[in-house]
Length: 208
Ligand SMILES: [Zn+2]
Image 1 (tube, rainbow, N blue to C red):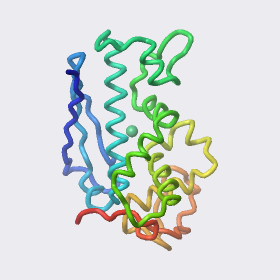
Image 2: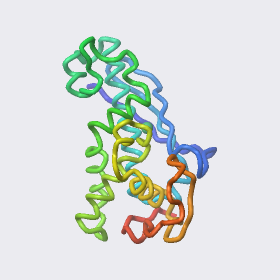
Image 3: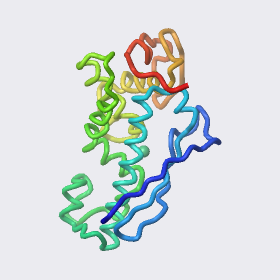
Image 4: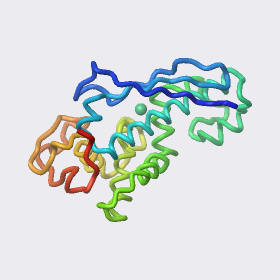
């Protein structure tokens, strides 16, 4: 029975400004895939539960995409060209899949193009009873864009600043109205115009 074995570890060396998580593909034997995801303890202490979960799902998708590309290129697990093309249509050209299909950048493009709803839908499992249904729809979709700011799909969105702002507030529960953060990705981001916080959005606070 094929499995994807993913280990979650805390990395005590990571801090507020470092990456939320780091994923290491530890290896594959063709059917089984082993990966370690190191979680940033600062995020676990200071980020909303919604942000933490979106981050974990994002990393799990990296592991999944890496696994499928490895299987395809190693001729294992019965992953045919057609299966890969159906899974990741943007990486299917007239000459076949890109040889570097599993790089982080390409994985981000796959997520941005095809997997936003996989990430946003996963957040409903938190059973947040504070947020209204329209708020959940909007905020969960916004959080699904976390970590995908450098993709072409994100760059073409009209509301980049608000998506990034929601992610900043959800990542740091100390950020609220009047708070200034940054500069962050977009140099001209209006830093001092925060009119919302993770609390006012109704997001779930971290375990302290
Ligand atoms: Zn990523």
